[in-house]
Image 1: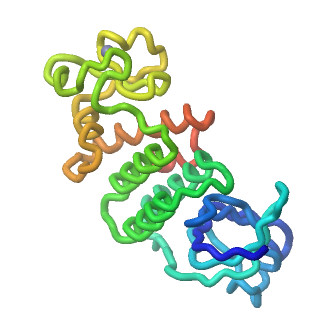
Image 2: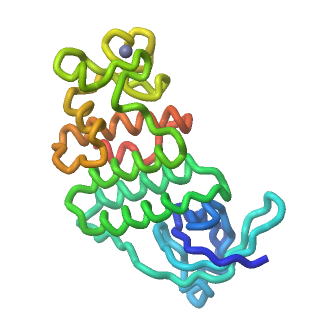
Image 3: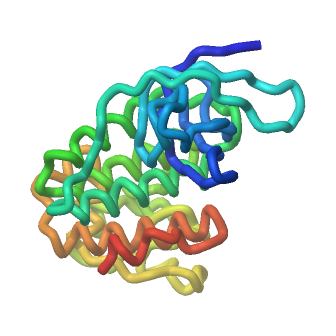
Length: 243
Ligand SMILES: [Zn+2]
């Protein structure tokens, strides 16, 4: 059965001299992998090879078994080119695609995540603060997959961040799934110390616009270690974003 959907390429691997295996994240069907036969031929049905972030309307056949889907049509839309001057934005987009791939299941639809990812690509193409956009996307991703860490109180004893903001230290623990206070930190060997600025920024994560670069880097370190815990391995693109 043929299906239509809106899709963005989050991974592209050569399959043969002429074909590719593409991982698409789609609006209605979620993530899946499809073979694009003949996509590397110059006169292919898909306007040439399909690259990372290529997006638009697709037609594909969804198999009944575990077999790979087959791409039959691809009408490309917006071209996110990430010109050379903005290599860091490209790295942020590539990390976002990698995390989208490693944290979602095949054929599990997340239409809001699809929109959030396309928005991220559009904004990264123009913004001068890619890291801030990446952080907002990563928090949206964690929320959508039901793994949003607790940022407003100690995840162990429930002491609120506001009550401890002036006096106490805070830590982040993936095992505790959020912040832990100075009284509870000894129970969580994986905890990392976080600055007051990070605690405040994460508490107000919907509005991190006023957060400075140093704090954004620190937040990104916390999030990458959390994604590594959730997926069981360090994201491949992490070193390009943290450097
Ligand atoms: Zn506590």
